[in-house]
Image (tube, rainbow, N blue to C red; front, side, top):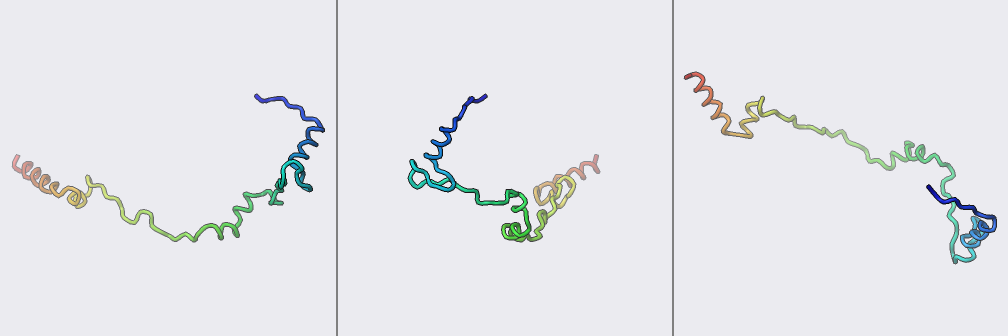
Length: 102
């Protein structure tokens, strides 16, 4: 679960002394200032996806063929099977002879 904490008004004032406020620096931490939000518009998704930002970020894509060579199936394509296994032609010829003789 969590812890039930009750903060008093004096505790918040003590925090202002330690961390300071947006208008004045901290008393106890030397040189410490609270950070202010930089964006006035919180629609970050709309800003990031705008055309101006996307054209600056993304490089231009070129139309590149992903599969420029068609994959062949060696079981259906005899030339490709001979490329992979040169002995396959000899085996096929021997099977053809055995079938004709038998």
